[in-house]
Length: 103
Image (cartoon, rainbow, N blue to C red):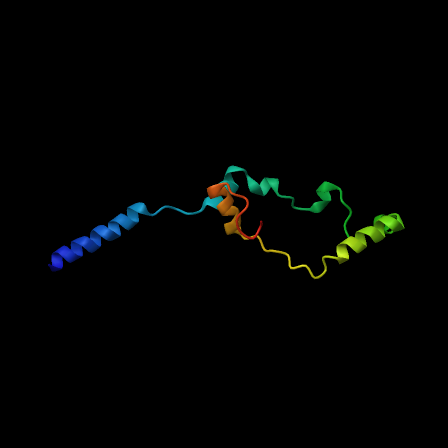
């Protein structure tokens, strides 16, 4: 009886080892598309002026600047959802972009 029990436990553990798969789908996908080369290292690459470029921002037309400020102030207390890596992973697995925090 004891030998049968040990045999069953051994078979169960062996089955688990065979069924185990590496679950690094995000890393695999990032490697496939060479993500490190696709990401911007520095936003100067897109030519958009940063906060310290005061001449640019001060020379915007007053109406335009005020319109952007008014629109942005609406979102001061907005609770921005966090999109987790697992949400992106679910898109890769299922193709469904409507699930999770990003919907």
